[in-house]
Image 1 (tube, rainbow, N blue to C red):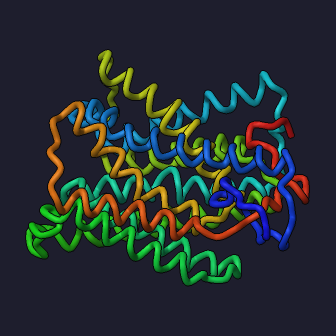
Image 2 (image 1 turned 180 degrees about the vertical axis):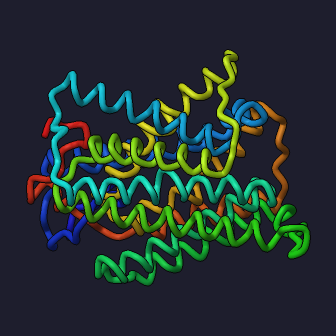
Length: 336
């Protein structure tokens, strides 16, 4: 009988019957678990930092500052560690497109959606990116859609819907509700396309760190130019709260979290990695319970159970790490 594998949820390819896991494969599985957990914990906490950004500077400019700072720090890291910074024009076009999708318009549309909708409802809308990742992986990468993955996605989204049911029930098509819904879906889809593009660029051997550095730089410049064209006043809040939250969002929310998430995405696929969009709001509510006194209802607890069950279904299959076998299992911060 094949030996049970405790780490198989975050591995890549089917394991032949009777195969034993090597130390390298276990290392990849454990590091993938670390990447998944770190991504969820960081992005689940960024809402608290974003609160310190609201009301001081226009959201578009705040996002531009955030990614500009992250791009500068990543570029500095690449320079002092000797990572490759010279790429062909086609590679820059790919990185620029990823910046447009992930680090500019995708974020901006979600921010605009929150003007018209509650944050909980926006979280549910953004979680539909999981389905978009599954379908786009099939459409653009030719990846087969797995039945258990779709079932897990549906179960998880239903659970998230139960957690935020009061906000969903209060949704109205009038009063800009439809606009907020469309903006949220547009932002989710652009982000999904950015996920797929990241998977593609990693297959083309464009390292995640440098890809993020250039992508964030291009995205921040684009957002800044659009804000000028829209006539927004350029300002900066020199306050401890704004500067501190900006540093947290740039270093942890952008550099570390995106580095972890996109590395994980390249290893296990955009479809599986996309499940973090359902878990992140749960972590945010857990933090809100501590800092803001959020009270869990029976529906919310049942929804949490469904989200966890969906997570198990999405990541349940037995896998082995192809990254170990083909030599691509190094961490994203490796020197290339």
